[in-house]
Length: 141
Image 1 (cartoon, rainbow, N blue to C red):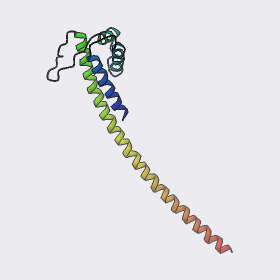
Image 2 (image 1 turned 180 degrees about the vertical axis):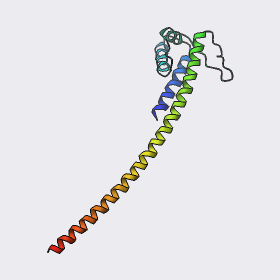
Image 3 (image 1 turned 45 degrees about the vertical axis):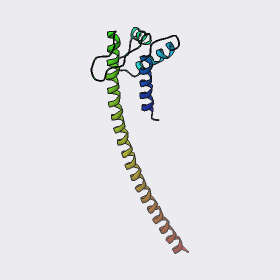
C-alpha cells in the first residue's frame, strides 16, 4: 500500500473515531485521532479545539449541504470545514505528486535508454580497438 493511501485511510479512521461518543474506553483513541487530523491539516487545531473534539461526538458533514448535521458547536463545524478543505488540498497535491513522479519516471527511462546507447557505442569502440590491436600484433609476428 502506498504511503499516501495509508495516510488517507488513517485520516478517514481518525474522522470515524471522532464521530463516536466519548467514553472512558475510547478517550485515548479519540486523542490519537485528533493528533492524526492535526498532522494533516494546513491550519493546526488549537489545544482547546482538540480537547473539544476528543470529548464529544463530532457529526459528519452532510454531503448535500454545506452545513453540518447536528452540529451544536460552531468551533467543531469550522474544524470539520477546515478538514474538508484540507482533504481537497491533499488530494490535489497527491495528484500533482503523481504527475511529477510519472514525469520523473519517463525522464529516468530516457536517461537509461541514452546510457544503454552510450554503452553499446563504447563496446563497439572497444571491440574495434581490440581488433586493431590484434591486427597490429599479428603484423609484428
